[in-house]
Image (cartoon, rainbow, N blue to C red; front, side, top):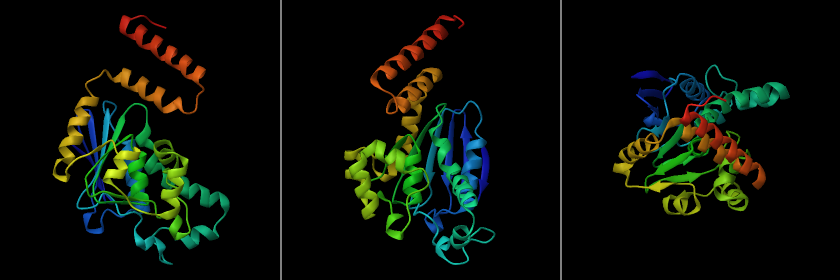
Length: 259
C-alpha cells in the first residue's frame, strides 16, 4: 500500500514493514527542503502496527547529498536561500534548521527499528540520513563522506551524535574534517555498517533482517532498544536500575499482572 509519493519520497507499507524510498534517481537522490518535508511527513503517516522502517534509494546512489541548487544565490523556488537564511534573525535561522532536522529524527523512535539499505554515494546529507537509522546494510560500492566542513559548514542534520557513538570522537572528527570517503570494508570494520552484501542482494538481505527483527515480541524489542539507546547517557548503576525496571515491566506483562 502506497501512503505517500511526492517530492522524491515514496512510502509503502506491507503489514509491519514500512519502506521509504528516495525516488529521484536522475539526480542521485539529491536532497532538498521539499524532500525533507516529505520525509518528515512519511514518519507521521506510519500506521501503529509498523515495527520496521526500511530506507532505500533508487538507482546507483543512496543519496549524493544536498542538491547543488541550494548553493546558488537563488536557492530553490519558493524556499529561502542560504543567503536569505543567514540574513534572518537567530530565531528564524534556528527554527528553519530545526524544521529540516525533522526528516532525520523519527528514524530513532523506540517503537520501531530502522534499517538503511545503502549503495553508491551517501554523501553529506545522504550520510546523515543513513546515520539517522538504527542499522545500515551496505553494498560493496558504498561511499560515505561528510563534506559539510569542506564547504565551510558543519553537519547539522543530526548526524554528529550517531557518528561519534558508532566510531568514537577521534575518528568522527577525522572523517568530518577531511571529508574523505569511507568505503565498505572500513565502514564494516569501524562499525558504520552492520553488514556488507553484494549489491544485487541488498534488498533481499534487508528483507531477511527485517523478518528476523519482527520475530521477537514487539514490546521486548521496544524495551531493549530503549535500554541500549540510553545506556551511553547513564552510569553503570543507573543502567542496572533501568534494566531492573524494564524487566519488571516485561515479567508483569507476560504474567498478566497489572502495575
